[in-house]
Image (cartoon, rainbow, N blue to C red; front, side, top):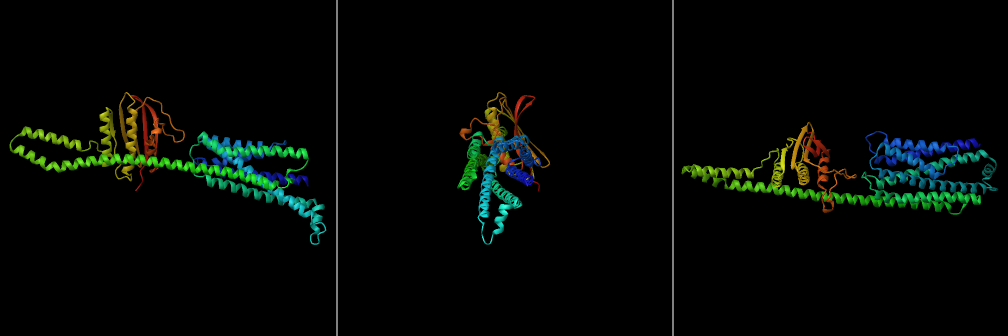
Length: 476
């Protein structure tokens, strides 16, 4: 029956590997980009192919090395198909390796213990009044033990699959919902428990082999070995789970803090909007209140035929009206006030401002969101132009069907460095609470299924920094 044992063992090995590959796909699927169909599936296929190939090798390969090779192959496929966020991929690969050995270690220990208990029970039926045939089968029938072996393999695969699937699902429940870029320190923090478990697994295999070679006995025969190893595997898994949970909560708190700071920055911008509108409204009320007196004065001057004085008075009145009214007509009073205020600020600093901005009419865009975009974009441009010899800012807006784009262009002779995590340009004033302007622009743009990009482009006059904000106008 030896060939049949080998066949059953080979089939079970392939089945376990295929299920491991399925769990690998399940584990990494939420964290790979879905724009190419089957990206996670191809990673699982690579893992299964390498492991099945290693199982068919004619020479012995240590388990730690074999599964390490399979896991590394899957990691390479992940990186080749999606090169973003490599730190997270390291965490996914190392954690899966550790979850795999923990789950199947419990499975091996449990099935070995149950098999030993079954053998002890069958051999103890000698002379038993009601179970004489069991003892005969256990001591004389090779076919009986072959069927027991098949039953044990089926049971062990089901138990191992349940443990493996449960471990992956529980870890996903704790870690899911994050696609943020992992920094080196974060990767080290998350992978250290898994690396410790992997090293301990390798040391365990080494001492297990040495013990069986020196004593010619199985380590599974030691009393309490099953419970000890099951407890150790469980502790290792819980340690990883706790570290991942604490990390996730810390990231959530960090995101909430950033959102609060972003909200504070938006409130600050809102106050400046309101102050500008209130100033214009107050000037308009004052002018309207005094308009009757102005008209009466002009009427008296003309009645006295003092035409020169009347002309000079009318000129001063016209200048006051022009000072109160906004000189930019964008199609919305809120953006008119913002752009007029920014234009005056630029004139005071000697910055040339070219404005071709038009608020999209009959579009479901909130003026507050557009004001956040304009204020933050122009504020950044004013700050950047202050370091340049050419002091010029251009604001342009275009609309093509339901796509609306805003461009802010200013001279830029420096080097644009971006944050790998956010994709936004780095600021030297982050410690002072700066750097939330562009985050506010992106947040407002994504409310309308849009985004923003920043690039340094060569134009006729030299190098320019171009900030583009793209919005999708909601349909009626």
